[in-house]
Structures are given as structure tokens and as C-alpha cells.
Image (cartoon, rainbow, N blue to C red; front, top):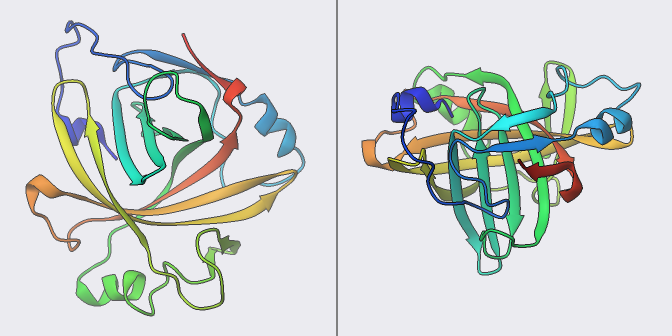
Length: 221
């Protein structure tokens, strides 16, 4: 998700908005991310691309979606289109973290017309199959059991940069593969801004690599 195009440039002198998500981080606030455990667990293995860098993560936008009655997805985004994703019961500051992971962009595909979209997302499409071959790197589907193609997961994420808000329809599937003592996750995602009434044609399919973290690996600073 490219926020300069989604929201445009903002006045950097504006006051920081309210605390957001389980980490209680405002737009413009900072998160310290420790990736030493990921690096240690992945030692000796070959990730699809260089592991994301740890250190200071500046939140430029925040997204939230209720997945079901017991789970809220919270996402912190930075200027490098990385996202820190957290699952919790309510999404409120201080809420217990059930799952946390970091994703960074890997690849992007712009299907040329209806036929290409069907090849990717149709009833027999590539996305949702039990396995996904990414140029020789094989991932197994993480969501959905069996050898049949699984339906893609859909939800609406409300995303804000602190001033404007957008409702983004997300269509996605998660894959994973062993990487040393951890897993490398592949999130394949299609986004549509509901306010613009855009169809999937003309849009893109985004591929992001991600890694699981522990609650102790992140902290607000």
C-alpha cells in the first residue's frame, strides 16, 4: 500500500493524533523492532529476499479490520511500505497480543485485462491453490486445508494517516514455507479503495514476505 498516492503529502507540523492499536502508537510515533530472534532462527537458510531490518519503525498510517467476533486485525505502516500486523481481541491500546508479524514488499504484478485476472484469481486461479511456486521457491497454503483451491479471504480495512480515512477492500491468501527454525510467510494481496469504486482491472497483485515475532520483540518508543 503506497501511502503517498493514497493520502497525498501532509503537514508535518500537525499535532500527533490519538494512540492506536494494541501498541498505543500514534501516527508519527515510533516502534522499536528487534529482529535478532528472526535472524537467529533463519541462520543458514536462504530467505526469498534480505530479511527486513530491525530498529526504529515510524508509523505513517494505521489500519484496522474486525475479522470476526473475537479478533481485530491492527496494522502499522511505514514509509517503506512495510507493515507490522497484530491480532488481538479488541484492537485497543494495551490489549493482549495474540499474534504479531512484520511484512515487507517482495513483488508486484499488474494483470493485463480480464483473462489475466481470471488466471490469478478465478475459480481455478493460481492464488488459493494448495501450493504457490514463486520462481522456484515453493510455498504451501497456510489458510485452508485440503488439495482443492481455497476461497480467498476478504475483509475491509479502515486505513488512516491521522487526517484522512480510506476503506480498503482486501482480498488475500497466506502461504508459508520452512526457513531454518522459523517460517517465511508469503501474503498475496489485492487492494481496492471502496471510495473510488475501482474494479480489480487496472489494479495490482502485491506479494509481501513476512516473519512471525514475539510481543517482546516490539515496543513503543
